[in-house]
Length: 248
Length: 308
Ligand SMILES: Nc1ncnc2c1ncn2[C@@H]1O[C@H](COP(=O)(O)OP(=O)(O)OP(=O)(O)O)[C@@H](O)[C@H]1O
Ligand SMILES: [Mg+2]
Image (cartoon, rainbow over all chains, first blue to last red; front, top):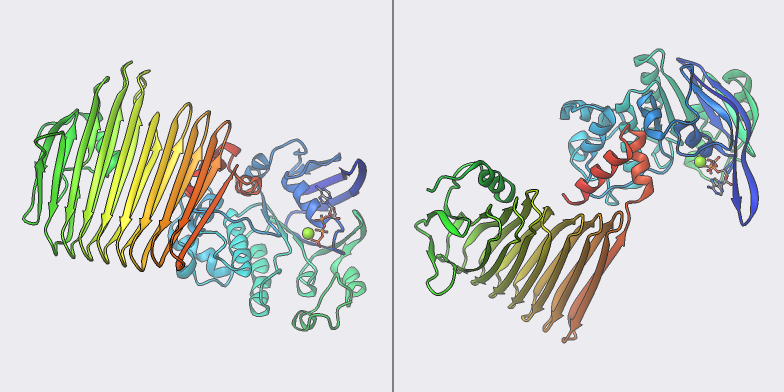
């Protein structure tokens, strides 16, 4: 279980203090899938980075499996079971997809096992396993490799920052299965997904709307989703296919 | 074959991936003496009589054969200057593996200066692999100054892979090449320096015939207080294509100076240079840390990949 207590995050730009996260309390229970949505710039990615240890909160504390991890490094949190799929995947010269999956799994897994993770995100494993994770890959390919890498971690808590971004509609439906399968494979594992997509919101146990660095709404999916339909916080498939129409 | 001790065997593995006596033609030079030599029907290796070194003659049309000429030095205070000349016959297709490993446990400097000249015949194809490696805890320096001259006749192609990853204190590497029409040169250099090491790598490539092309790419890492200079010049004297690239990572107090130079003496010479120097991108380290690596482990993975 992850618990955020009164988390705040300020940055100073041009001498002025800017509050990006303002006193957020949030619990991600074991075995649950939480989707965080909300307008651009609302602080979603920042919150995920704070959980992973990439940003240090200005105030508040973070507990994971009962332990206060507020002062722990990114590595220590990863070792305790926190995985994070970035909104913008990172590229490397000379590091292959296989290398990354091996590092993520923490052991010298077989090529066949590494390929399983690629197949589950809809990539033909044979074509990608030896590719370098560099700029020669397309945005959508990089994004799927990022997700496959995080799946290989088999973590207790997995954070996904807009996993659907850059992924075509057909694969997008498979992506939903990826999350469902994760839940099935690890009944105690918890998942936090940052997303604007109605279909992803639809598989949530709980939805959190983050706006201006504050929790604007929070509750069971069935209670929150209806109020979001038709807003930018829950874009439907049709709107994805016809950008500019339908979504507001 | 002369018996090699464990250190000499280890150096041979490092510089030539040799675990046993190589197949094909070879000469193993150990502490300034030949520890074994073999010619084949198509490849003749003969020692020079005027200076130290070898003449290596490869018959025209020789296909799929290899030559290994590794050098190992384990005595402190040794200095040698060696000339190796390669005559590669028309249409031959061969792999040449050179390389030098120095283990210096003493207090005197050990230095190997190797001048390699390649006379590459028409339409011949050469793959040349050269690895340099140093080890040993002595205060004496390990110094390597390779000079490489390449003369390529029409339609020939040369691919050079030059690697120096560890343990060489001082290196001045000079590579010159002259290419006739339709000849092609590809160079892949991988260099890492650490502690107080210095490495200077200079290339001068002249593209003298129509359709000649050169691609010189260096990837390097400078750590500790080390210093590197990459000085690459491509001269286009005919309609040709030339590309040089220097892609470098600096760490700690490492310093790198990249001096690109292009000279076009023909209207149809197309020459390009790219250079990038910087520290490891922070997001790369953070990404690997989220996968459970420590910062130091993350750096190691990034550098290993970069120099692969
Ligand atoms: N280090 C920083 N310095 C200055 N401003 C920052 C910093 N980090 C984040 N911000 C600002 O904080 C706000 C929240 O950013 P964040 O990336 O968390 O939003 P988001 O909810 O993920 O948005 P999106 O939906 O566009 O991904 C933005 O206005 C951003 O510009
Ligand atoms: Mg974001």
